[in-house]
Image 1 (cartoon, rainbow, N blue to C red):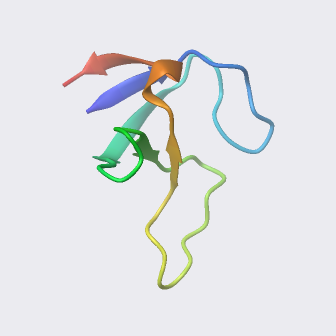
Image 2 (cartoon, helix red, strand yellow):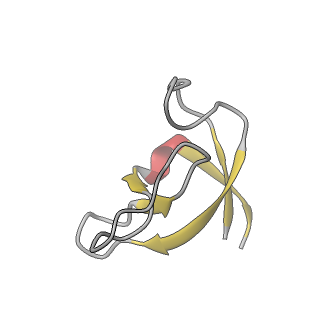
Length: 62
């Protein structure tokens, strides 16, 4: 799924208006989206990316 970020810009994370791939939809944190940005680094033993609230996004592709 692809989503467009509608929230406030974050200097080390998401950019307003950019489209991101959703890696998963979290079951533990009420449907939040796991997204990797160009600033995220992979750490061994941790899942990639971070979780973000779905209300900050618009779905552009299912």
